[in-house]
Image (cartoon, rainbow over all chains, first blue to last red; front, side, top):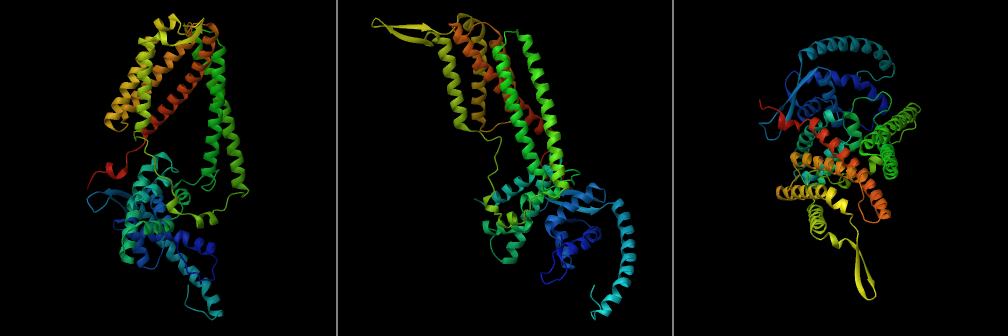
Length: 125
Length: 329
């Protein structure tokens, strides 16, 4: 899924577990305007979230099959491209997920903060 | 090999493992995305998007089996890692059963003295037996693979992925490509048979020397020449005409494929008629042998026709390549 640094002490499977649910929220957040697969990957990477192609592109199709995204092919550009955009249903889900995310991060912040302070390593999440 | 051909091979290898309903759409999207990645990588590295770079992009994208597994809906009983092996084993099992059924059918037809109407019943009985065995075989395989999935005896692909080389991908076979040599050989064979059996039937004979004089014993039974030869001639002539048309067009078109299927059905009817009819060769013992050969040919023709209609129906229901069918905005 998302790429991680080799120097991280976190086992890769735990890192993947942590990011799995977040990726859907990140993708929905960036598809408020139309994007094709590769431009979406770059947009996410530019903002610090690297997701490999083998995860991102099948995810787009899955979200579309769930009715959260809409897509269509554009032929007028240099090569045919499939553009994705969030659907009305996806927008409702996105709003609900965002609210859940904010609540969750507040809770998790409270939970992890004491441990970080006691480790003498505050400020990194 | 050109860069585009390598990408095509890769996309094809993935597409072959996807359900038919999403195959063309995913392939079209992958073609677009891979071309995008390759161009971008070439810009970043300030070099041409050559074969080496394309192979590097494909290595990053992942082995076809893994990529296809991500596109497939999550399996309930058999997961994406074991699914390709399951399909392969199931196909081998089905092919073995069909081969066995064909052999049984050939033997039944050879030994049968029943009229033509009995042929349908024999075919039906063998088909029902094979279908029952196939279902049982499939159920058993599902149980075995579900067990493997459940108790973790799945293959680890990490080392295989590390060794995977995109340049080793097999070429994409074009099902509509004309194999000229094959068609020309069939055409010559058909024309040769038509000329030989219609204009020189006496040449089909056993030749011998008796008291220093050449003699011959004609092999073709008169009943065969009057009742069956016109039908065989018509089928061979139609096949020759079809081969000529395909050679002329340089490609198998859908119409040509349907015509090929129609000819297969015609051949099956004629072969069945010959099998259930009167003598073919003059000595009775040779007629029995000829009918055994015809029974085997009939079984092969039935299997071929089944394969042809399976492919035709598959193409009929397969969606066209997505970018070509999408209306421009």
